[in-house]
Image 1: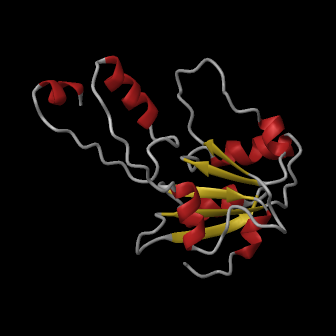
Image 2: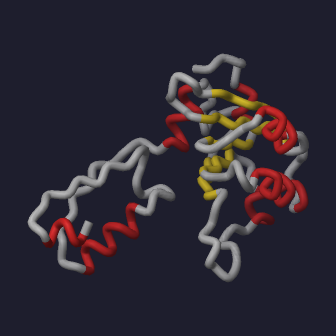
Length: 173
């Protein structure tokens, strides 16, 4: 982007969803500003909310969740250690929404249950959200990794963990 702007081009960087929620939008803006390039951001709607919403799963609900926590399921592999505190995440009473977590789903479910999250906690995986071929796989922390494997779940997908998943009625939105 820097090269093209310096060559006199007008650059539009189009990203799906919200470029600042695990979308590296912040890193891109930081680089552009370091090079003295002005930036205009048009906010997007994050898939972490829009995708569950489209299948009838609210990320908050008076009965089930008064808070929502967004986490990445795929941290930078060059980091010396995880920034995710699974002990704290397991204790949260609200909804966990995980982006980019399909590959690490078995480890995520194991980390949450090993740190005290009830294995019966409902989980929904919404693949290809908002597309005609979207698909939902539902289970619990205890069985979701196996259900996802059996169903051939693949990215992109949004993973929702918590009581709000009980509001899913089996439709595709």
